[in-house]
Image (cartoon, rainbow, N blue to C red; front, side, top):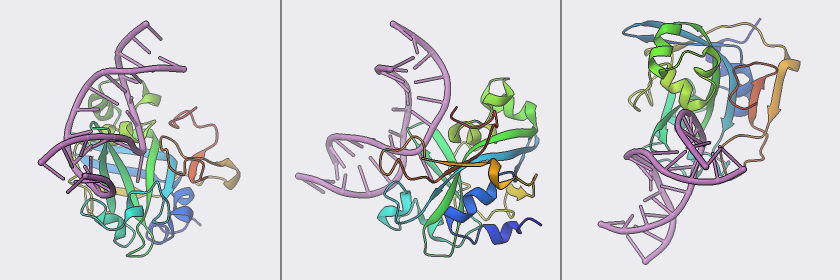
Length: 192
DNA sequence: TCCCCGATTAACT
DNA sequence: GTTAATCGGGGAG
């Protein structure tokens, strides 16, 4: 029996990140529904120099300090959006970055959003994932999961030994901290 | 107010 | 392997 999703998002980010692997992230778009299996995540918390919440509460990071179960969308490098799931207790400033996912449903919609056809290149990176499911701005940041156009559904159980833990990607500070989780052997993870 | 740089990607050489 | 694209946050002045 897998833990309830509501329970998972109440956990600290370090515990929630591996638990989110294998779940299905869904979004309702004007063109239809898209579904993807989460295959890679990263944990961030307030004591982490690489985390947006490290420097305390600001207008941008406010959702991270809410109770778990909200979305946090941020914009970076002048061109990319990334989707996070806020976890933990209110005031903690924790979250899990969705880094990569395997497309399950709504291929045509995602292919149109990404302007490519290759299935395994649709969402194998945080910016690509956001673009594939139609996140083109930060208006979803702070919205409540399951009460907005984005929600989670239970997925295939992932064996503990299939979960690989490694250093995070694409950051300078605390880059060696082992807070990246992904499914072993999945062709859909962001980094080979 | 200015200035630097990022939880990235894609298109180069 | 290297680098341009591109803009908002937040620290410095």
